Length: 289
Ligand SMILES: Nc1ncnc2c1ncn2[C@@H]1O[C@H](COP(=O)(O)OP(=O)(O)OP(=O)(O)O)[C@@H](O)[C@H]1O
Ligand SMILES: [Mg+2]
Image 1 (spheres, rainbow, N blue to C red):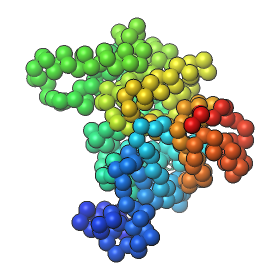
Image 2 (image 1 turned 45 degrees about the vertical axis):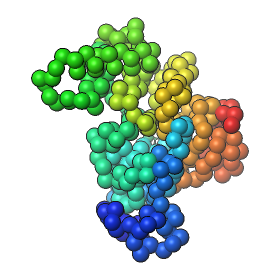
Image 3 (image 1 turned 45 degrees about the horizontal axis):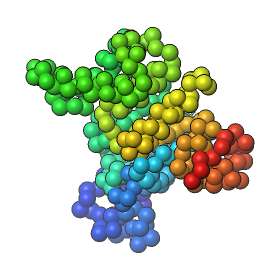
Image 4 (image 1 turned 30 degrees about the vertical axis):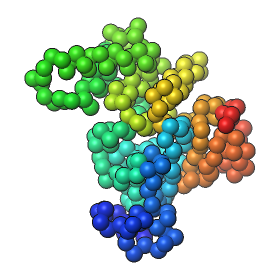
């Protein structure tokens, strides 16, 4: 059934948002609601015989920090790639604020308001912090790829870039080449590059990966601040369980491409199946709800 709904236009769906002819029980399942910023319906990605993401249906509420956790190879990064348009799903659907974005590629999801970070740091190493962020502002701003723009546009980008640099606490490093930054600052720069486009939803894939333990709280405070002051939704893949438990409003646990459990940090910490499959006591203090 899932395959049948791929690639259909809006007219092919009934009033409930389900493909015409769908059984009523399925109709409820595929109705995309604007109540959720991201919603997937039986999203699936096969790599040959391997099912990396196995019919995952998820709903993410706006203005929340929602973590996706699970062991290595669970399908978390692949799931992010499907949401952001880096990968085409084998079947299933993705909705952003109720709109079907299943087949929309990466550069267009960015324009829609989805900012994506990668597991591996993704910056221009020979450019300074300011140049990296200004480029990101330009890439998604007015007049991109038009080289004979009025000076005021350049001025606008420059101002916006400085505001972002202040937001990610890199003012003192603004003129430093990115490649010479300590790893923790490179991750802050990466966050700045995403924020330059002012996205509504941030997809952060292991933002603390490779960071020294003492740098983690600062980055987490930054992410919390971006979420609270900018009213942004953060969907986060993270292995650091004390981070996940303290920052998340909701947690989805993936295992072998499927959703093993979902709940708030207290529920997930107490979930016996999750305990056995994954956590085993490696978590910190759950966020008070
Ligand atoms: N492009 C690809 N081609 C083939 N197999 C892939 C590809 N990308 C991912 N996989 C496989 O899909 C499965 C899920 O990988 P994925 O990277 O999504 O896991 P993950 O949960 O992000 O793991 P980690 O925590 O290690 O980052 C793995 O078995 C991986 O080897
Ligand atoms: Mg991954």
